[in-house]
Image (cartoon, rainbow, N blue to C red; front, side, top):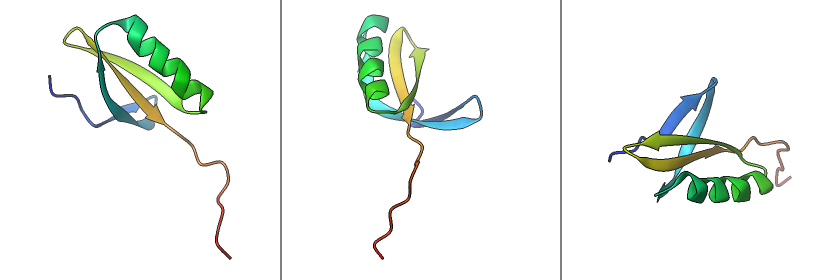
Length: 65
């Protein structure tokens, strides 16, 4: 298995979280944690394993001025 580090899904860039999950249920538990932390998430099945890709939109830019 050679997962892509980034994918485009519905016109948005998502980054792989680096984990490989054996079952869909395992990946869905991780998805729920990311969603609670305000990430957008998508999952991909590859070679019978499940990968989680995430993205987070910056809602407010804080500057040090």
